[in-house]
Length: 266
View 1 (cartoon, one colour):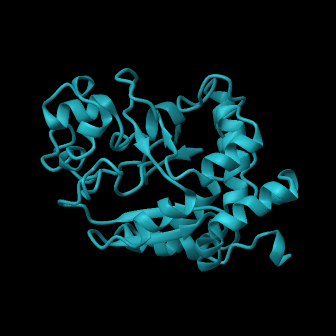
View 2 (tube, rainbow, N blue to C red):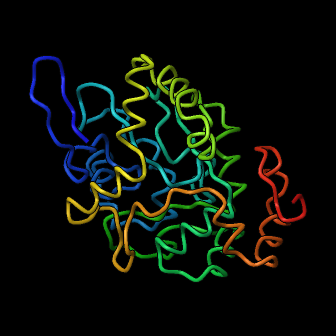
């Protein structure tokens, strides 16, 4: 991918250098800085009620808008009903959801888990990243809960405006979906710019860039590659009928709300 402005030379995008915006919301370093404490001194249960204060004063990113990636559910069982992200000054949240069957396959490749474990993770009301009372690591515990609980925690909250985007629509209706995204983010919604962005972020282009940069920083140890297939429908291909039925049985209310089918609907 090359970025350029009128009258300037094109510059090759480096995935590990040029995609930084704001810190991930679970970054320990960022939370330490924003909260003025050493988060290692707190258990995750003690920390979660405080996390929503991070970012309110924007010490680290004082100028301009910033975007923070979030894995957490909007609230955790330990956050005492408070959001784990700051809603003060937040202009909105973009929530991207994907068919849970395909999420299971993606998790399997990302974490090197077997598919049965991935299915159980998506159905676990206590599911989380860094789920143990562990004070080390670069990120704090991120409570996610059951797939459906996570979805509803964000799409039904009323603290900040939200735009819900299905991964499948990003692939099937890219221009329309990303025009809506640009408008929501108050970014230029010029069709030419949107189409160029789609071209530059195709899965094949990202895979090529990952190879050229020697790997993407967010790829965990043991994961073959971060940008893998990008396809939809892999879950239906790779999960057993029993695994698909387990997911649909536990998640069908939210799946149907967002037009996701299970094996019983095929």
